[in-house]
Length: 207
Image (cartoon, rainbow, N blue to C red; front, top):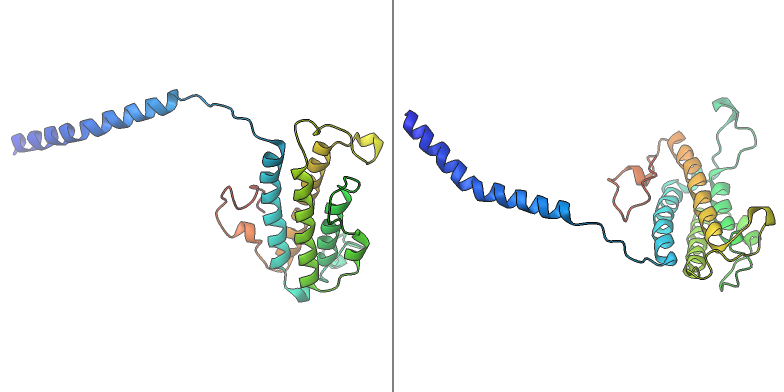
């Protein structure tokens, strides 16, 4: 019996040996591969981030039922006097996506005042989607040569194409967090929190 066990053990090691060596060699080969930086255009890099934010923000806007677009936290929940409704938050995001890039000479610019008058969820979400298409057009205009060229805006902020794109994305992140709170108050799980994060499903800013 002892001999049989030793033979079985020996065979197991013999058969496993090549696999172990191969795995070790593969691991060593992978470990030795240095990271090789490649040139990525500003538009491609920034659009990848904006895509993730758009997925999260639009997903949150779509998740709230139409009858809840007038929802705002009541004062019984805390210091919420005068805060915007869910629909107003979404409209503000759409308006801002045009305001950030006003004066860039981009086609299909929309007067933000027309967004403020929208009433239905369908119209508001459509305006939000269209505003992100406009923001992507702005990002597509950013090149290594003009990224830090000045653009119209408050002089104290020293606005450039790159900084305004960054500001736009930071603004989306800010209001996404607020939309998430409104959804949670209504017992709704934000879509970005319902599924495992992947590179195509947002920025990792799941709440």
